[in-house]
Image 1: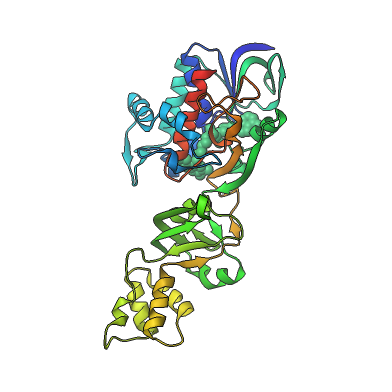
Image 2: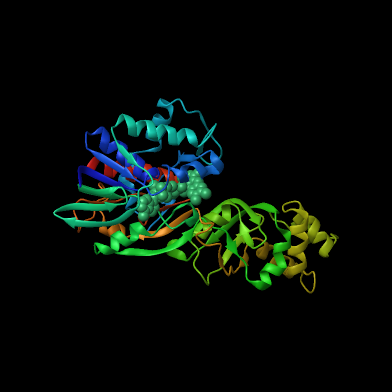
Length: 391
Ligand code: FDA
């Protein structure tokens, strides 16, 4: 049995950051992961370039049953703080779009940075270590394949259920339940949507076509609307606009898509003496959408007569194309897991359980889910630092 101050379970973005912060404070920290190396998700993130933060990050960019919960941690460790760390390590980066910061070279730079910081902070990193159980016997006892650890504090940073083939497990949720904490129902988020049979037959042969749209999903209190690219896939819809709204979407709801934001597409057909037929409608829509998508959309929405009223109805429909997805591509393709440990169970400054002092939850395992665009890493860094300062 080894005695330490803090055991951090999971060496992803949140666990690494927490371990660094606690180690810098002189705490004896063991960081363990069942994977053979640390930060595997960081390595594949942002197409291998890691979108490590977003300079516009605010609590409004996150979904949670309590939309205010993330504010405290996000204020403690801001995008400027992670940028300062990245710059300290000489990592070059750039803004791609919408405030998203990516490494110029490789996501490996971020992992190397975190490994160096861990070494400097005296963190003991155990990889290939499976956690069998977490128990409390005065202190916490963590049973692992590398032996037993006894600690004052345990930080659960085991992430969500997304990408199981990379080692994602529901372990963090199990620990929460074991200690009597409520877990908000989990669901895949930032995930492509899948069409049912009829819609699949109508649209999916157009796979690869994309357009800038405004997509919206969800009901009043939890509605998300995003102006970004949409992509038709062989099973449904994807692209940033769709991934974003997937986090707000629930089974049985429609997704509403404005295919021509800010443009009055069919106005030319309303002019006196203008040609009014499917060909003219396709010509008008082709100025906004890829040709084949425009042709298909008109073929499926062509009115019986080309009156002013029917043109106006078509105009309304092109700005509010309503699709009913049959489902999502699931955890295998989801970038994150929405839901998780109920924030009502946690202290927002420390990320510590209110019921079980010494037990902390950080990162994706918590019911805080960011938009696409560097927000999820910012949450991982910020919640990790908050816990690291408290343990
Ligand atoms: P994370 O999942 O990173 O780490 C959890 C760790 O716990 C893992 O190392 C796992 O092996 C370990 N673990 C799990 N169960 C265990 C057990 N029972 N015992 C021991 N260890 C266990 N976000 C962003 O902001 N910008 C981006 O560019 C991207 N890109 C991106 C691409 C792809 C393909 C995916 C899947 C996701 C992203 N994300 C992202 C999301 C981002 O990767 C994610 O939100 C964070 O990695 C979450 O960090 P955590 O540390 O909470 O969990």
